[in-house]
Length: 223
Image: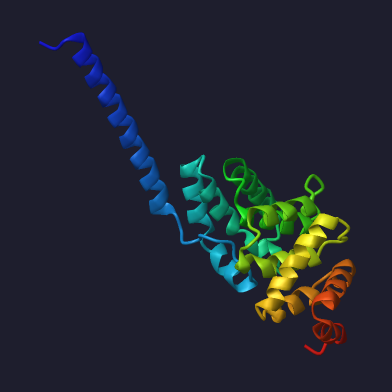
């Protein structure tokens, strides 16, 4: 005959088993639909390829619900909006990516790539309720030593209408030094070519302090 304590133990064990089983099913369903989008594309070609996996990423994010990593991957499939001539420059696409960015930052605010994507879109499309400078700084704070993000981060910084924030200037100068130290001058040249007047001025002044010869080539357009 079962005692009350044995019955209680069995009921608790059964409840825990049901909860663990449900959690496993939840995790597996998200993984089955999850596409291979584990990082933010940093060039137009990669962004266009990732955009083709948008539906799968959306399903995985909705199933994951509170998983910030899945919402980030879903947001990354809209990264083609960062570049001109995007096939998805539509109001509804911008609304959808804002929802995904909001949920990513709610559940996974440590995602440096997400802050960078937010900054780039806020700057490009002039989102009135978002400050791209603050989002850019958060990208630096959460991922100060992510080499693959540095070219895109410099590109977004150079496309700001103005670069007056002294803290952002220091952070961007650090990325410039690292890019030049790693012999990635092509990334600097690309950012300079697509920069706003304020961005060009900032890059010129910063490069003169780091590599005057490179600064002259950059200004003369001989790269």
